[in-house]
Image 1 (cartoon, rainbow, N blue to C red):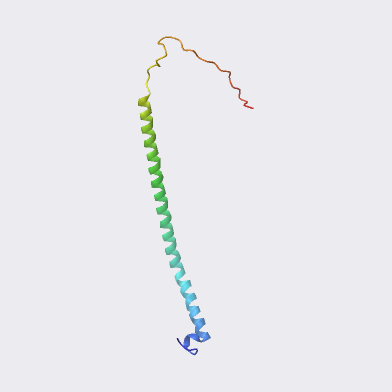
Image 2 (image 1 turned 90 degrees about the horizontal axis):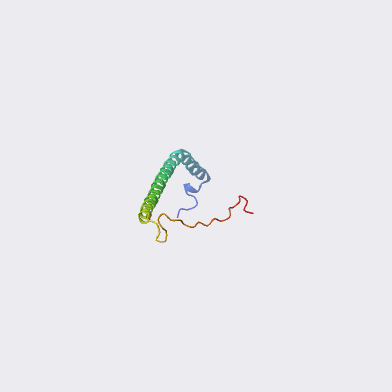
Length: 104
């Protein structure tokens, strides 16, 4: 451990070291901030691209699932009449009272 009378302990040298640190910070701040900005911009761009790709995949899979479900349901339904319906006959229809626009 250095003694109390070394060159680093003198008050003039402390200010010199502080001034050198401040000069280094001023000189190197712009390139460091520029690098961080470019890295931040790249991270933002990659995040947006990733989110867009995932969104497109999810929407595409849901569209395919809806299409397959619709096709499967359309194959299950048929145009044949029910067993209790008579061909050319009449079907009873129940007419209920009409609703008014005011539901209160």
